Length: 306
Image 1 (cartoon, helix red, strand yellow):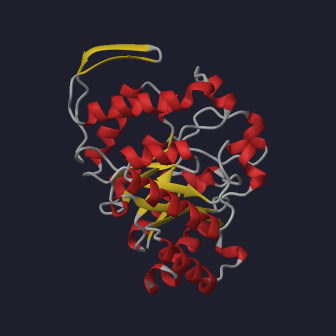
Image 2 (cartoon, rainbow, N blue to C red):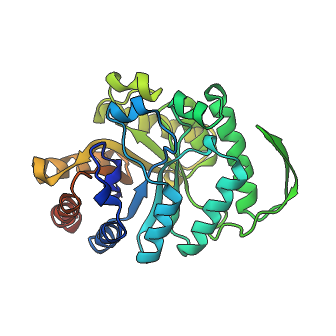
């Protein structure tokens, strides 16, 4: 099993100390030293105050943050968890990703989503009702840019004629593409075009806000993985070529609240049986030292015992 950890600013209780240069350096280098496989930041450039005040996660710009982390690490992968291409002109997205791919020596993995906060869409001048079309259009443009192709296309609010954005991506044909894929539409896209199905374990109580399909239990997660495999088979794709990523089995880890290593190992065992390749989770962020101590605990009790 591989493990990806999101920076503690993703905790709704985050404090400014968590995003200081020294603390981000300590967090990134600690995660690398302890054997984590990826570190991540998420993407909410303009959430509403209502969302923030009702427990929405904290956010730092993910390209700036991952670029900083690239400079202080050498092995660990840099994960966008998750990037919303629907929010941006696709040429801007493709250029930022390709640049980060080069500056990290090919360590970028793109966790992707279509977005769910209507207020944020409107703040950014984007219609939330066509988010799926925008996503597919953006990824088509990005793939051409990452391949080093000249691009001629018309899209949502732009018209490109013979555009060549450099550099092309370092990883070929592009960085791995994972998609938050609880819905059938997203699963179909990943099976056709992606490298990772990212299933979010979530109950009925939160789907109204997140605008997705619930996966409340490990048994339900197993059923969805079976569906992914069936969809791969239907188009002649080897299911082994698509990574399975679980998020939500551990919504937020905080060593101060007590962590049961045996229970977590049992969950890892079950997820391994299901065919899961990665587990991604969030980290407490109200106290920088608690974040590091939680990383240290996980590295010693879980990663080192695999």
